[in-house]
Length: 554
Image (cartoon, rainbow, N blue to C red; front, side, top):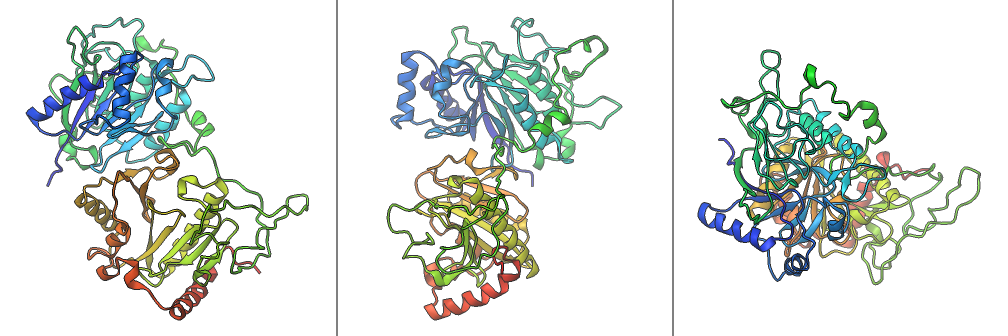
């Protein structure tokens, strides 16, 4: 059965006229039914005192957007102040800033690529501008996949230069309009819909091909739509409504159907425009300069660290392990881990911690058997110091956490199991990364992913799929409540917790009939063992895990 199409609204420069925009959206929804999301390109914020006062009503919650609204960043220096950082974040209830550049994938599988601001004319680039490095970092991970065919939607504030070639002429000064870099980006990403603004004009270009006729296999067509300013006096179109089935679920023959009015690709060089000298190259050399910055999550900080001190033995309280030698043979001072302000059940140096559950102790993290675990081999990876969530961790803690993940995956693989990792940063004060093994013969990774998606939808939650090589910090700034799942395939699911969240959600999904089929174990309190039983279970698990334990060095 073909997937139900997503119903999407796109909007041009809002310039602070939020109430006018949302009143119009509500009128449309009343007439035609609910839309799934609103995408805003161009300048979202205004610079007048009236616009600022209007924004405060939404920011404080006095008013609420009637639809999930996603916006681009500042396109001028005057509006930079409205964005707390270059990373994506929620600015108000139902209004989310996507970020400087990246890819957003919703639960429906709709893939939306975006770049905020205008092309930088100088280095270093101002906050409201993007650079060729930003575009390279966006393009490389997408087009590097052999399965890449294009993106569903591309959002840019600037027009692509020359988009009018071979097509209908827009009502703008084409001498000065648009960016060559955006044109190059559109050519590489092959969006089915590309939206832009900033020119105060409405322009729907004829659809264009992404393949050369008789030389390449047929590909989908692209549609470029520029939108005017909200409430403009000339009544030019500023809202565009459309239905779209995500490319990845669409019938391939339907996807590549060519409309009668399709034109040649406006960005492909012909003999006459090979003189267009300023075309940027997203070339391999340029991509190698910044290989780790992928999608809209900046992974530029590679966790580092010198040689680990040897001769550490696991002990019960996390003390006495941290003396290390530097390259010159000098004894370093023991590392000070962040401490809690009150009692904490999970800080290793805390009197409250149940040390008999500890499996392994590293330099920055430790491994413990889960109390009331879903299965006998359900474990937790925890930081030794007091950190609330993964997004608060320093790079060396992240590095060691990854080592524990790798060790656990190898351990469970040897036992015919795959790992599911999840974290709930909500009503918890110390990070607990849950690691639950699922037998390979019980279900596939796709089954696990589907179970999480379906059970989230049943509770009116939308789990968002995020790209594999990403840093959670870019979508969940410190303090953001969230739920996060990592599958053995590397796929990651994320939910930004709004108000309420079922505390046992991760366990409930894994315990469900579709997966482990142990529904009575969904609540850890129902699975408690006596202290003696816990000690015996932990001893057995410690012995089984020891061959995989990098922290156990004689």
